[in-house]
Amino acid sequence: MSRRKTIKIKVGNIYVGGDSPITVQSMTNTDTRNVSATVEQIRQLQIAGCDIIRCAVPDVEASEAIKEIVKQISIPLVADIHFDYRLALNSIKNGVSALRINPGNIGSIERVKLVAEHAKDKGIPIRIGVNSGSLEKELLAKYGRVCPEALVESALKHVDILEKVNFNDIVISIKSSDVLQMIESYRLISQKVDYPLHIGVTEAGTTWRGTIKSSVGIGTLLAEGIGDTIRVSLTDEPIQEIRVGREILKSLGLIKSGMTFVSCPTCGRTQINLIKLAQTIEEKLNELDKDIKVAVMGCVVNGPGEAREADIGVAGGNGEGLIFKKGEIIKKVKEEEIVEALMEEINKM
Image 1 (cartoon, helix red, strand yellow):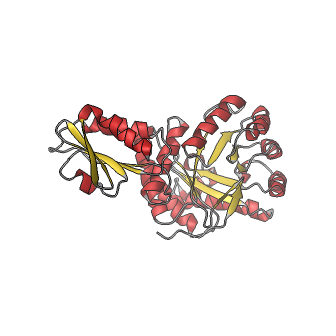
Image 2 (cartoon, rainbow, N blue to C red):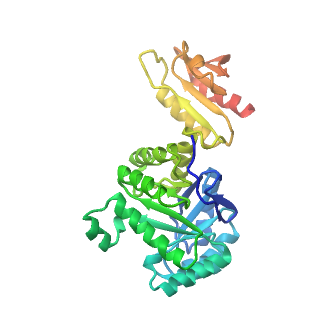
Image 3 (tube, rainbow, N blue to C red):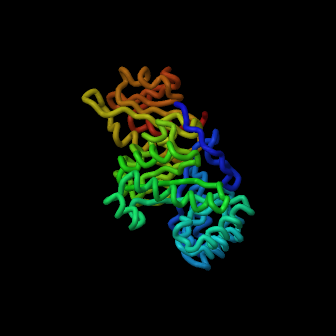
C-alpha cells in the first residue's frame, strides 16, 4: 500500500505527515477548566493508544488551564478555538503543541498574522478544520449545496490566508457526516496540496453506527494512501474512539503493535456459546498490553487450522475447548474453564 507523500510537520514531541506513522487522535469531553479531570482523561486515553489529544478552549479560563494541563501530560495537546484570536495567543503562550483554528473566522488579516507569527515563533502548527455543517454562506450560494468542491474551496481559502502571512506549518481536515462526501472531499484536496491531512467522519453517531461509518470512510482513504492522522468521532466516551481508530489502522496493517483479536461467525457446527465466549475474552484482552494475535473459533474440526496465523487461541467443541498455539493444540479444557485457561496461557507469553 503506497502512501501519498506529504510535508512532515512537528506536533509537540511527534511528527505528522511524510514518512511518520499515522497517528490516532481524540478530544476530551471534560471541562478544560477542570485540570485534574482533564489530565486524568488524557492519561487514560494515552494508555489506550491516543497519540494526540485536543481540548476545547472556549474562554480565557480554559486557555489558562492549558498551562497546568501540559505540565502533567506527555502527549501533544491541540487547543480547539473558534473566533477569538486572543484565546489562540494565550494558548500558545501557555504551551499547546498545536492550534485548531480557522483563520477566516478570527477577524482581520492583522489578527491572523499575529496568531501566525506567535505560532511560528514557537514551532506550533495550525490545523484548518472545515466542516460540512458550517460552510460559508457565499460558498453555499455559489454551489447551491454542500459538496466536495465547496468544502475544498473553503479549506483552500483558509490555507491561502495563512500562506499570505508566510505560515506553512499547516494540517488540513475536511469533515462531513456524509461518508461519500467526506471521501470525495479528501480525494480532491489531496490532488491540490501536499499538507498533511487529518481525516475522519464528523458526527458519525453512536458507537455502533459511528464505528461503521468511520471505518468505511477512514478505511477507504487510508487504503488509497490518503491520510496522515485520524479521529473517529463517536457519541461515546473518547476511549472508544481510540480503540476503533487503532483497529482501523491494524486492519490495514498500518500499525503492528498491540493486541489483535479474531473470531469466527457462528454456524450450525458451533456447539458452545461462542458469542458470549468471544465477548468475554475480548473484554479481558482490552486490559492487556501485549503484541499478540488471539483467535476464538467455534469449530474444533477447522478452528486451529483456520487460525494458524494466530499466536494463541481456542477452538470450541461439544462442551469443551482446545487451546492452541500457532495452530498446534496444547491442551483440552471444559467449556466453563476456557476463559481462565486461555488467559493463563496468554499471561505466560
